[in-house]
Image (cartoon, rainbow, N blue to C red; front, side, top):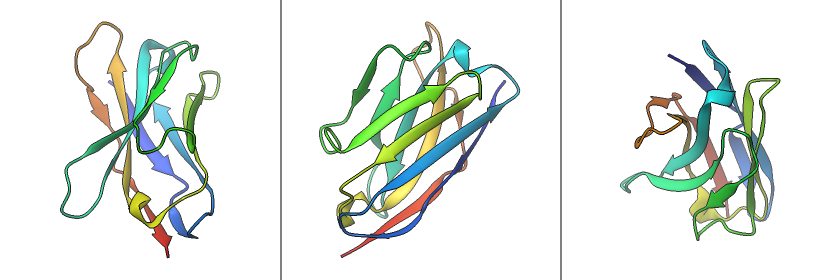
Length: 119
């Protein structure tokens, strides 16, 4: 079992930057692939980015490629999402998730942090 808590959300202007953090407790994050997802009002949850357990591979959704970067520090049990060139359509609640190695689904989720981009 792992507990996840996101932080770093807030209000930012169009074109600005934010860095989200996801701190884990309960088990070491090095056992999990980690991901970020987001959900805007009235929309389905959307995949943002993920990173392998070792941190040597990442992938991201088309809508954020080239603007968002996921990273992790297993020694600090923390995952990050650097968000640059933010747009109003990035406004959403951002969730951190953990997927055990060899598992097919994301098993653990944080409560989310709100990101609002003003136009």
